[in-house]
Length: 196
Image 1 (spheres, rainbow, N blue to C red):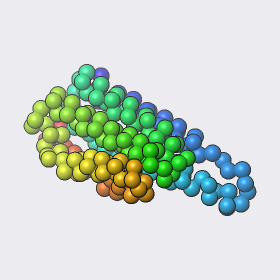
Image 2: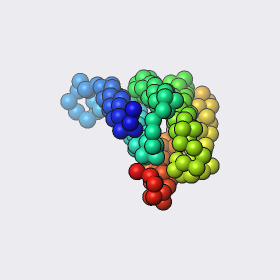
Image 3: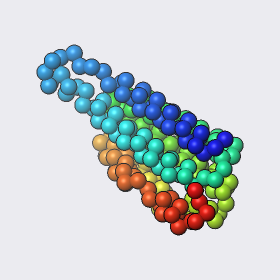
């Protein structure tokens, strides 16, 4: 399998995830602006999840640019990532319907945490295939941003069980950290004359 096929498959799954999430936005029954007020938590949950899926889509694209050949472990690691991301619509819907309830906020954070761990697993599978001197390995370095994100998710889950607004604020913070696309891989590819 080529990286282009894997990327196209992943793009399709991510597009379906976004479509499922938008279908959770129900049309209000009223005709004035106050009819939208009850939908605000659902919309905010959708907005945050849309940003997260966009972040994964963008970074996944950059990640796969560093791959020379797709292996079986890379394919399985990619499916593992898509599995956790496919649970984002469920977690988003539950969070939106119960915006500041502790358990839905913690479950939302857990899905984000497990998605991030799956992304780490995918990176590790690529480095195992490409080698320690690969473009990806050099680009990631110590990956402070990635490890900090995991710590913030764990803290957000814990805070969600005590005071959900604080936990959700940490999830928003992680999204803001990653909103600017990660340029490390692009820089490493530009510096490597043998890369595609």
